[in-house]
Image (cartoon, rainbow, N blue to C red):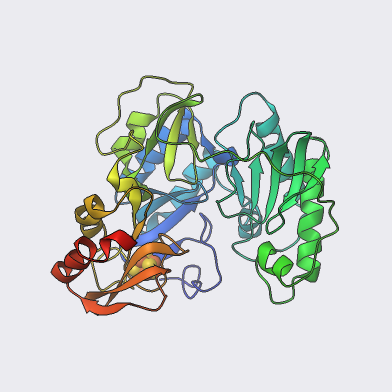
Length: 380
Ligand code: SF4
């Protein structure tokens, strides 16, 4: 393996130019502009996933797309294809900075224009920590509040606001000034962050940005699977689909959501492709599970088949997280119940993250099923 993909795991965010080694080959992460794929891009990515990867495609919590199982010798062809599709940045620094999550709930030209202007402004932006990102949440309501972002452009009663994550309210901005003001806020963060890597932590430490905070965002709920005003929305179990599924969805541009779902733009009444979820009551929406073994070398347990078996035991409103190891990639925060793999068995953590303190250690599947069915069930 070359130096390009070696030794870059900690504190580093993978991209197309800096793919990440995994148990099933390289993971090539693509950040589509505006969290949206054109029909041509979606069809070409499906073809690339089959020709140069293992045919599996992930959708991440920042609405990025990942081709899995790519061989290192295939990277030049993958990069050439992505470049031809407008999906490759000129260099790794630009790719890392262009960490923009866009609401799927937009109409009209304003939101795409804001994203394009923010991308341009970021070309001269500061160097930021790997996970630092922006949310362009400029639909009728701000729906990305629970999604990871550090600087947010949102809707308030008065119009657009610029809000620093960690503050309850933001400053009114015009559409024309919002992108430059967002980058100025990022510069302030870069100059003052010290050891902090995220805006909310810096603010929690007591340092406030030079930003008015008079306007609250108009907050709305995440977009559920099913028919939506923006098109048919389908959720991907565990955020993964096959190339064939992506091809089936690509009958119109696709809006990618941070809730691991895809909106087929402007198309209503589309039948649900096999394996996807169109019902917001589906128990599979209550479980999160990472790649696990054998796809991830850090895992000693298989995760997703177990999560499917356990999903019917999870009550509505609760989340069960099955994690291959304590890193907790699939669900970084706490869940009502987390099963963390260790030495081929599972530790059970309640109301905590994958690296939380276990209530019970070293459980087999039968033992943890009994726990989830038994007296613990009401606490989930
Ligand atoms: S949580 Fe651990 S096992 Fe799962 S994908 Fe992340 S590193 Fe791999």
